[in-house]
Length: 596
Image 1 (spheres, rainbow, N blue to C red):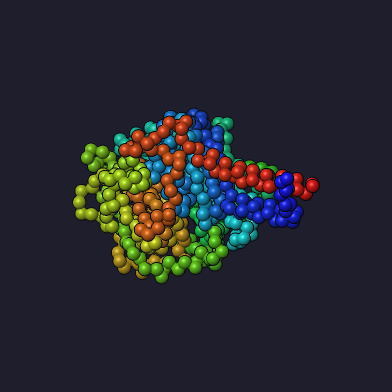
Image 2 (image 1 turned 90 degrees about the vertical axis):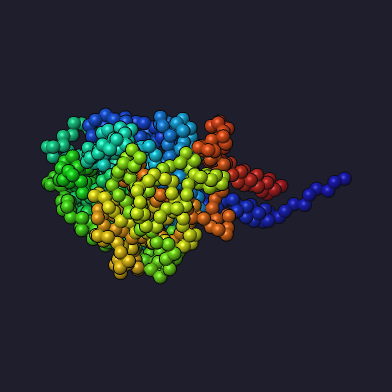
């Protein structure tokens, strides 16, 4: 006769259940999103045109997550051309596979879906995503990213009463495909046809701007309350000045760094940049107020109605429309105002961010620099009969096989680690030349702008310290002007015409990372380069190649049909489902035992 199994005490089962529950749910949580990218019809400036929306929204949905969460975004491409989304400012720690640019990913073919999976590791702040290929950003496809502090990390200001995301962008009524051809043909697409705020054209603030029944943006607020405005320049070419009639902008954060809190009446926001302001509703609230974004440093004066976007700040107590003149912009030709404003933005070294230790505990001014690059951009010129733009005399040519895939499969001849540290005294050329970074080295990069327009430089995978900027040519003596104590850390910086900007970056994130000019025509014509950072000792310092990788170029034979590909988000869901299943089984055992 078989003996029955011994019964565990009820308290032991409870402890076992709680222990397993802790193991299953202690890990950083996953959040899942299903997005369909498709064309929509809109008339933001009164002309019906095709825009790119996500899940029927233009701008697209906001990713609202918390530090260290795992984000899984399944993207269905319903456009008529390949697509990649890049996550502007998200560092993708050890995971450049998810960066969404041509150097790391094959584009998602029309009709296909692909799932991004990344962790917002040790980050906070305000960012945005957008399409990175085929000039598609000119048609939209962008949306916000908010990374909140974990509960254990205090925010260095009182929590606001509301959170508002604003996209300010230059806009053209030509399609992105027509703009793309214009750039290739050396046709200057000129000043924008208008300025959009959250995808809407301007409020009819003057006789030059008639409403014609077209909608404009409205932000509803309550008197006496304070709101956090996250403002992104998601445009393609133009610096925009942002301001709110009769309200101060208290700057508190930019691209993942808490700043020294300072009041501004207006802020120049360059292409690709993001800022957070606290705005207190301290006016009488008897009427509405203007929210304004106007062009800077363009051929058309910013006072022109065409060059001005206007939305409405609507108090719940308002009894009438906004009135009076728009708040004044800075002097259009005064680049020194804009530079001094940029220099005034400082890192809040007493505030924590994603980690308990203060941001300022990393004393970048005391680190020995291991590599120095002086990168000079020049205006577009003909190279071998094609219009191209260069950095250090090289116009980047995207290969058919992404650099990261070529590196993974040891395919030779795709790229060369020979990007020059200084401009070369030779004819410009088109090439696939890559910067070689030293893992855990400290790189100094000086951007010298030899063009006639403001340029925005962006580096994927990192936040860098902006340590200096000035007019004229950078020299070794220029280092005496550097801010070595509280330069702001961000991922996008402006370089004024005939001027330089210097950054310092600690290369602790292994991967293949895109360094580009965010002005879309410059980027499209070749003003980008990749930074290769390899850990020579530990192979596991980078995430392994995703199971759902799309193959192209010389690796095309490895590509399976869409129906046979692994759905990466499915694996994550099944893991969570398995954990819940285990808990349910254990809970059932517990209940059954207690019932005996």
